Amino acid sequence: MKNIRNFCIIAHIDHGKSTLADRLLEYTNTVSGKAMQAQVLDDMDLERERGITIKSHAIQMNYTYKGEQYVLNLIDTPGHVDFSYEVSRSIAACEGALLIVDATQGIQAQTISNLYMALEHDLEIIPVMNKMDMDSAMPEEVEDQIVELLGCKREEIIRASGKTGMGIDEILSAIIEQVKAPVGDPEAPLQCLIFDSVFNSFRGIIAYFKIINGTINKGDLVKFAATGKEYNADEIGILKLEMSPTKSLGAGNVGYIISGIKTSKEVKVGDTITHVARPCTKAIAGFEEVKPMVFAGVYPIETEDFEDLRASMEKLQLNDASLTFEPESSMALGFGFRCGFLGMLHMEIIQERLDREFDMSVITTVPNVQYKVYTRKNELIEVHNPSGLPDITMIDRIEEPYIRASIITKTSFIGQIMTLCLGKRGELIKQDYISGDRIELIYEMPLGEIVFDFYDKLKSISKGYASFDYHMIDFRPSKLVKLDILLNSEPVDALSSLIHFDNSVNLGRRMCEKLRELIPRQQFDIAIQAAIGAKIIARETIKAVRKDVTAKCYGGDISRKRKLLEKQKKGKKRMKQIGNVEVPQKAFLAVLKLD
Image (cartoon, rainbow, N blue to C red):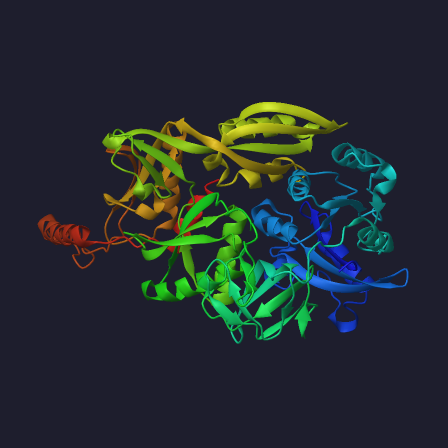
């Protein structure tokens, strides 16, 4: 056990984690020849296309140092705030972390939040300054920032480059010298922590675990603590680029188990595996439950695909434990699921993965956050969906979630960023100068305001330099109203939203204008209205498509034409009574991109 090292890589988006991981794998000869490609650990097409890591990936490397053989378990983690749950699970399975900072950009918001997460778990932090081969690198300034953040010595910071391979041997020796070996007793009762799982259509569910205490052998009868179910360990092994089976694994190791589990409810990330014959006394304290930030309805385009969608969601949840969902129904869209996501990028990725991996086409409703509604009888109702709001006469007050946001930016963009935050009802708490031209702004603002497009706007204002991170603080009373969209006096519940009173008229007007462009013309007039309660605040009309019924009346008396027009009018009227408006899929999506 003294020769095992478990470590992960943490950094902000685009600071070169995956590239550095490639070099480590190449240097230790774990991957070579044809298997070597850029971002070798990112195995999803989506990750390669977008150049981001979505899943954390574990891989084992062997390395000889000063004549001794060492086993290094590396977990590469995502950098985006929407996938921070992946990072927290990886950190729980490690004893050390490489903190990577881009020498051209310096410390950014996600660097800090991932670092605090690692320090909470008492991980040994090894600071690495990446991209040193770039002409725009600012080693002295960035070193100052790292020293200020970590309180380490300048000479402890490793200068490296994922592209050229500079500093890789220093990183490997720092991991072996500084990261502690895992502590655990191979003779004690078995205790394994599941930190990830994946669905394989041939072999069932594969769970990835870290052994805290004890030893597991192939063929052992094991029990999962949370569900109490028992299984045979058909295959256990270690995670190389491919899975490689072994006979037994001892304490401190990271590996996988295949036991023919077919239903996804039986494997929970954060669960403990133990032996049936000699169980451990208590389960390992897993991770805190994930807190979704954004809620949206996901509905199949064809109603009969509902069960297929449920199966796809369950398989996807195995691979992405931060996805939460429960069934709900909508008047406009039929049966579907109310899903909780960690952010808008997370929502987009889930939608894309449902389409690519499970061939499911879905409609996503307007995203919103969770509100607390207090009735006049002082009952508390949690509302995730505007249609779940009780009658307005029953409501005493509505409370909405507030976040504390940290924005790190260059000083030249302060004015525009402050304007953006004020427009989103933000309140400036404090501002700190981190170094010469970098400043950290701390804002308190409603979570509902940043759900739509805040992150995108922030990036475009600051030319991609501002970095953003946030955490929930509390719920506060707010003047919120339910904005309904009516088509021919019928409310479309998939388009309704809860919004602050001050923004409601503006949003209602913009939504009506947008829908007028997108809904195709029909044989009758369609009235699009935005309403708050019984009060209509905006209206647009889509004119009817008319057939010229008087074309065959050439000349002659006006009464002949009038007769035909009256007949047409009656038909149109009857049509309007039974007419149903078709709303295209892109209308639902366009509401999200009103600007």
